[in-house]
Length: 171
Length: 163
Image (cartoon, rainbow over all chains, first blue to last red; front, top):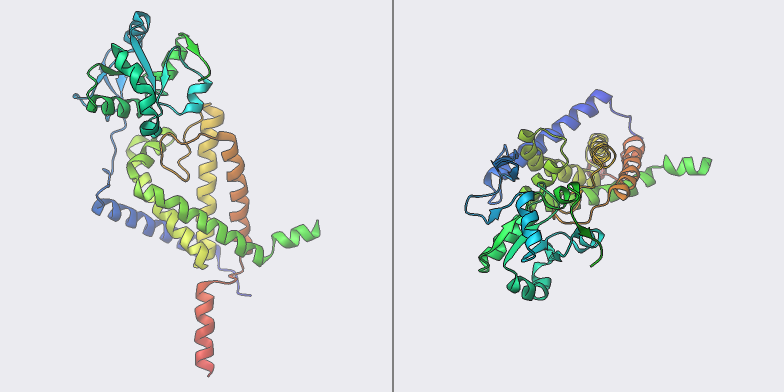
């Protein structure tokens, strides 16, 4: 059996390994096509009062709506709320009358949802909350498919339930 | 009880744990390396690091995981690589606990997949982290540099010299 190394030796090597990993990571990121900027833009930006959107939100993206606007649309009953979260989350609770279209399973489920989307005067996509970008991805895709009346409610499930607005469970 | 203790302190057990941890870490690193943007989003969601550190962490952590995983499998710098794995697992456990117990939020783990809508799993996650922590501690303490690549080459070299 070999003798155990001194603890400072172990620590030194551990630091060296971490440094090598760090350097490879930075280099790989610099040369990779999928590389990201070293310092990300993670702060939210406020578009208008009480409207907060993720930094990835672009001016040409589908319109973002506040909780108040979402509620008005909800009351008009001409708007379809599109829940972009997973089915389990949807089943556990969602905005009353919302339709589920999990972003990850867009292709499998889109045809089922399509008729109700066609009928609706307005589509509002939402997911968990401002941390969640599924609704934005969904709205972009729908706009890309030619839907003109798509909006994003970034406040999502979190803001809706915090305000105590109507929800329901089940599929 | 003594038997259990002996098994836990055994170098063969360390070898098995080492392989499992190594494969796990290599596997876990690959998807993160391939999808840095998604992984950065997950790191951000943990709400632990200041935002300017999020991307750097997301870019470099998977590589440290990959190297440590490979070293564990090959038995290279075993004490050091198992120590890093131990510290990383400890950090992951603290990160998850902070979100589950203090923020009360079940966030995406980002452990093995960077998919942003993968299943969430706070409590299971902590249980798994605990097991892995124990395994890495065992490897750190009892590996005895058993069945390592450097040892293997050393043996071959000795044989060749003694001929």
